[in-house]
Image (tube, rainbow, N blue to C red; front, side):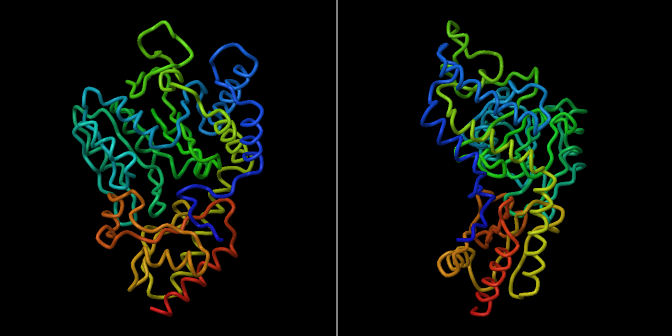
Length: 377
C-alpha cells in the first residue's frame, strides 16, 4: 500500500511513538493528577513533558497554557465557543474546515467570511476591511486541507492585535510542517492536531491559550484541582481539561513532537514541497487532469485534482483497488474551500497528501497510475 493521505492522519510514526504508547499503556496506566501515588505523579509528569515539547515547537513561554484534547475539532470548539458568549462578530476565511466553520455557525454570533482567491490564499487587507466595531474573533486555517495553500498568519496576527481582536489559528495541517511562533505571529489561540504531521497517535490534539486569556468552558468536571469549588478552575490547563487524560497517547505525542524538532520543521516542509512539485510537474505531462490551488512550492504537501470524465470517488476507488494507493476523495469536510476553488458542484476532488515518510518513488508510482487511468477514459 502506498499511503498518500497524510492530511487525514500520518500512517507511519517514529518507532519511539509506538514504543511509548505500548509501554505506558502496559506498565504506567494511572490517572494523572489524581492522588499522590507514584504512578499518578508519573502520569502527570509524562503529560507535562509532552506540553514542554509542544511549547518548544510553537515558541510558547508557559507549557501550562497548553490543554491536550482528543483532536483539533474539540480544540477549535473550545476556543470559538469559549470566547463568543456575548456573541461578538467573528471573521473567518472561505478556506475553513467544518471543524471551525460549524462551531462559528452554532455559537449564534454574527460572522463574515472573507473570500480567498482561486489559489486558496486570503489577502490580509481583506480581513482588515471586514473588521467591525464589535468584531471579537478572527479564525484562520493556516494551511488548507484541500489544496495546501498557506495563509500569511503573521500579517493577520498583526492586524488582529492592533485592533484588539482575538486571533485563533487552526494549524491542523501546518503544525509539524510549517514553523509556528505564537509570540512573533501574535497568535492568541492555536489549535493543533497530534496525529497528523506531529506524528502522534490517533485521538490526540491540543489548544494553546495565551497567558491572561480566560475562556468560557464548554466542558466541566473533575480537574484534580480546586475540587471544593462548584466552578471549573480559572487557570490553565485545568480550566479546559476535565476527566481522565489519555496519558499514554499524550506521552507518545510528545515523542512525535520531539522527533519533529530533531528532524527540523523546515526540513520536513522542504521535503513535502519537493514531493508536491514532483507530483504536479508529472501530472501536467499527463493531460486530462485538472489541478487546483497554487504553486506547490508555496504551500504544504497537499494537492487536489480531478480526472476529466471520472468522479473524484471513482478515481480514488480505482487508485485503491487496482493500484493500492490510498488517497481521499470528496469534499474533505471543507465545503467553503471547495466553493472557493470551484469544485463544490463537482463532488469535490481527489486529494494526494504527502508527508515526512513519503518517498519520490511512491510519487512516481502514483503518477504512473494516474497516467494509466487517464488512458482508459
